[in-house]
Each structure stands twice: as C-alpha cells, then as structure tokens.
Image (cartoon, rainbow, N blue to C red; front, top):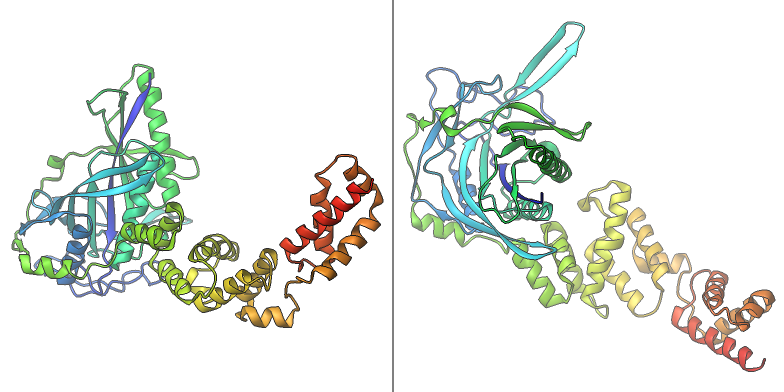
Length: 487
C-alpha cells in the first residue's frame, strides 16, 4: 500500500537575551562555561522564590510571531507544566498552554514541487531545562547536572501537520532558522543546541483524510539528523502497517550511530502534565501599540530578500535563496555588487556560492574569517571581466587572496599572471604544438575532431595557463582549417 507522510515540527529556539527568563542570572554559553556558574535560588527552584518575567524575551517572541504572520494575543497566560526529570529543578516547567503568546501564522517554503504553505499553530514562551551529563567510570554509573541552562528563555514554534515530504521538512526548518537569525533573536547554532527540532510523524493511506497514530522524535540537533530520523520513521511505520500491525504512540530518540529511532517512553498527552495557571505570574498583557512598534523594527526577511535579489540582480531563485539565508552572506553580496564596475551582479553570486564557499568548506573556516572583503572580490571579478586574466587564473588568484589577504592586482603583478591576448604570440605557440605532435594532427585530419580540444589544452599548457581562451580558440581553428584545406 502507498502511504502519505504527515509531519509537524515543534521548534525550540533559545532567545538571545542577556539574562534568563524569570531571574537576573546571565545567559552563558554552556559549551564554554564551567557547570553551575550562573545559578540563583530562582532558577535552581528553591522554595519561596518568585519569578519575574524578562521583558526582552517577550519582545523577541513577538518579533518572531509577527515575522510568521501570527496574531499576537492581547492576553496570554503562563502555566505550570508538571513532570519529573533530574534537570528540571522545580519539578515543573513554566510554559504557556491554553493561552499562548501568538497563534495562526504561516510560512511559505520553496520545494521542488513549488511553493508550499505550512501553517504555524502557535508561538509561546517558556523556560529551558538544565543539562545532564551521564558518566561511566571506576566509581560506577552516575549523572551530573548543570543548571546554567535552566531558566534560559525558550520560544516554542509549533506547526500544523502540513508537511508531507522531506523537502517540506527541510524547507520549513531551514527557513525558520534563517528567520530567527535574521531577527537577531537566536544564533541558529545547532551544534550548541540553541535551536532544537522535534518531529511529529505519522503516515496514512494515500487519499485518506484521517490522521494516523503519531510518534514524536525528540531533540534533533542538525538538519541531517532530522531528515534521516523522519525518513527512517516513515519507512518503519510503513513496514508495520503493511504487516497489519499498529504504530505505538510514543516518544522516540534518534541514535546517530545506529541510524535508527529508539523508544524513550509512551507519548504524553496534555493531561499527563497537569497544566494549571502559574500562580506566581499575572496574565501577560501585550498592548497593541507595543506590537505595532515592534512590527516597525522588523528587517527584510530572508524570503523577501531572496525575491528582491532575483528581481534586482537577475540571480536565479536557487542562488538567491542561498545568498539570502544568512545575513552576513547577503550583506557581503550586496556590498560586492555595489563596488562592481564592469562585471554583472550575477558573477558575484556565482563566485560567492561556488569558489568562496568551496574554499571555506575545505579550510574549515567561518565566513567571517575570510580575508577577502567585498571590495577585493569586486576587483577580481572586474579584472576577469576585462580580460586581464582568464577563468582558471582567477580561481587560483582567489585562493591566494584567501590564503594571504593580498589584493588581486598585487598577486597578478607579482606572480606575472596577466592573460596573454597577443594573437601573433599565441599563433606561434599553436604552430609549435601542432608541429610537435604530427601523429595527433594526422588523426585529427582523418576525422577525429575531438583532438581539437586536446590541442587547445596543450597550447594552454604551453602558455602557462595564461592564454586568452577566446583568442586561442580562434587562432587554433584558423590553423587547423588551413591544414585541412591543404590536404
């Protein structure tokens, strides 16, 4: 039987505030800080302490909600979500349940099948938990708790189950990450766990409107893990249904080494958490004037930017999406375009996405660590456009620029890399190569015309890679035609 996947995502994004959600403890990088250096009685869950809401966290939550086209609620209520876990100091998490911060948004994503609208069900505020480290040594098995992360502001963004393919899931997740980064409310650093994905996955027979029994895959901290976990789960559920078995509604983890999901516990329902209004926090009242003020500060979002790049600079949609997905890259591209004198804007897009990204991936460096600023790249592209150097030379020059920080003109002059365009000189090189390879010439004249490309390569090699390809091609065709006509 053929099945249709039905997928919804819950995204937890730590908000980039200076202090925690309900106390004045600093938010620290848990991957760099010593354990338990940013903890107070409030975030440690000591009896008798009272939470105080972080104003900036609410502002950031509203920003994201507006960027997703949500309706921001005038009144939202904080609730206690009760469950026991060693890294949850109070024995409950302060979250929002029946009355969230915002509802009814949407995100339009590009897929190979065209645009697809994913509805956003709710956006709500809550606090993060602590972090457990499980240890096995000579003293036995034990766990250590670090409360640096406990109480850090979290924004949970819950989609409707509108995704039906891995392309939908990838498009939604990557675009949502790009939005929170563009807004400056989250770094998007998945390796540090500041944004985490949970996928609700079920399948149903194609053509059916009924929802199947779903599972929840927790704490997916990379796009690759998310895609592989969802793909594995779709296949696993299909096998079960084909056997006439049922899918158990449960919470799953993802084992990266085994490339498989595994059961963690039976799936909780809302009543299992015994939600009730947080008695120590009053209702959160958001005035419309404040919402409008925040809305006026929204930057151009990645999807809007990609559309503008496509229209304004004539880059294709796929290139525009890549350039617009990171603010740093988008700003670099536009700065480079503004400095170009003769090269077309699309050249900048092609070289950034192609050569520049390739070098960064190979070197393991971040985009911000590159030594070639927009002015330096613009100079290189103009030099190439003017014919001073050819394509291959330009690529080698860029590598030297990235390694040394020297300008294109300096490298070209010091290394003698200027392109050779003198037709007489190139004609002489061609004659020399042809005379040195009589057997190849005989085969060419006998009908093996692909040898023209071989001759081209040999002449370019003789020219040290600096011959103007257009001049070389023209002169080579002229001499080969003359030899053919004199047979």
